Image (cartoon, rainbow, N blue to C red; front, side):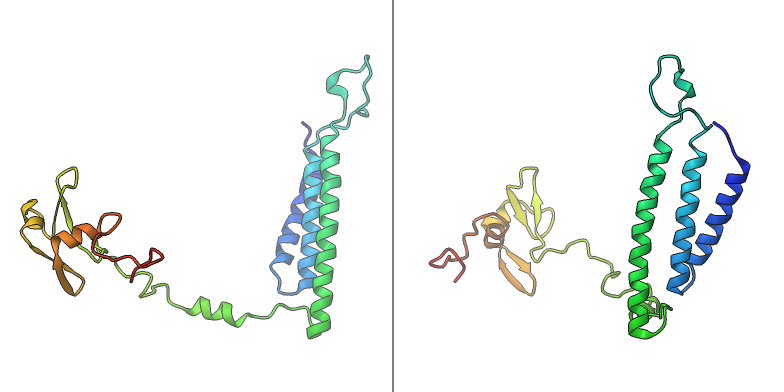
Length: 197
């Protein structure tokens, strides 16, 4: 692969000027920056193409390494079409902002400024979440989940002996709480369409 120092220096200068112009607030300068970046990219693709070679037509007497690679030229043509479309789109935006506001400067967005000034800590989003978030703080006892209690260490007898479980602000029998945790709750009477009465 050949390295053409002149192309690399011109490409670097175009990239530097293009990035500088894109950071401006004027849409016209942003458009010029985009055009410079597109041309710098075309030069980059051209520089990666290597030495100039023969036209890529097949001939038995020509070695494979003597042909010119057609891929960089195809990529440059694609880049030209894309940069033309972006330029046309930006010209439309510039024209529309000039018609509406008689300027092409991008103004500060009030909502963006408000969001930037909000503190990073949000009391609702960043609050610590308790370990138990269920309304029914039940402890499953045993590996098969056959026993349920409102505290660890009690056995299956609590559910059968009429022990109470605190669910939110009220107490309910442990058997009803156990039924709540299983599909097809037994302590809710279904309505005529299958809903809850």
